[in-house]
Length: 378
Image (cartoon, rainbow, N blue to C red; front, side, top):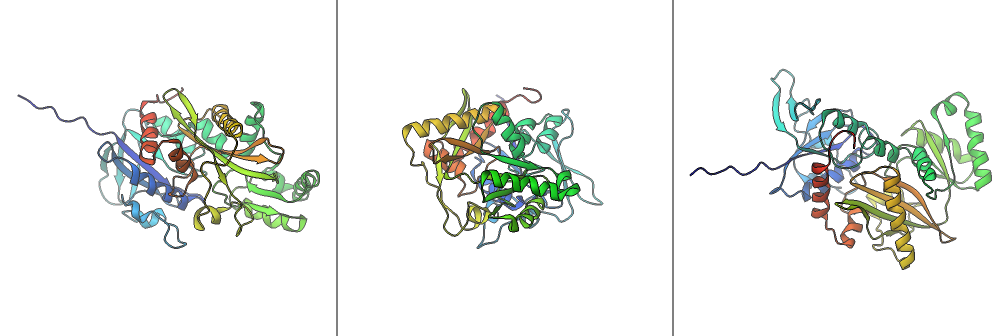
């Protein structure tokens, strides 16, 4: 009597790091995700992208992907080789991953069934990696090319939300050529906006996250430095007016019957910081309030808006939607994140934990949704 071999476990490639300013935040997220994946159910292949763009086989060691004191981890610290490279599939004919070392025969690491791209920011969360995976016919967790690009570009995100009737705050965009060819005209554009909306304003990179490169500008004398800070992250900048009110966040997760919203959270004012910036989020561990102390009607409204934003941008898998509850009682959507942080203090998993979906189940749902979703146009 012959015995059948057990079915092979799906192989999940967790891709993290990246060549942008959110590299280290991505490593933190990867550590949490790797620690939560059920190893009895899945095989795992950690792949890190170094700051200079090399794809490296990384150590499967979540404990080394955490903040130590005020130091953040990097792929360079986790890479198993200083020179080796990982090649993902490049065509739908094969899903094999190959590892190369200079002067050695390339080694096949086996096939990958799904990619979990825990990359934040440009060259990972913005549709570039998603397009490559679509070309190769490899399923992946999260939003597709369009939604990823929209979720990264704050200008076009706001334009799409406006076209769907979602409330957004006042803003003005300064494109690279404007600042480079006519800085005086670009500066006047911002000053005119501030004169109409009032100081202070927030100067931001148009395509960055984790509150990188953001400056609260109280007057004309602070403007040029703020623009240069933002342009270090992105040559395109966006300037937003100050919205007075409470910061509210809401998670969206795709279920079998469609997207659902979590209970919302509130980000309280952080006394040591002007706003909820990078240091407050990741170094000083500012804590959000989950669930947010809202009325039943306010909770229902923000959950409705979060799902509407998810649908407007054609998102898949997951989204964290960030809002302001303004002094007039109306919600304004600030932005969405198509791959929100999964660090131990991140709001997205905390909101779903409070809603009844624990961290391991959350990760499993995202992987299963990717495995069952068709590749290509959908």
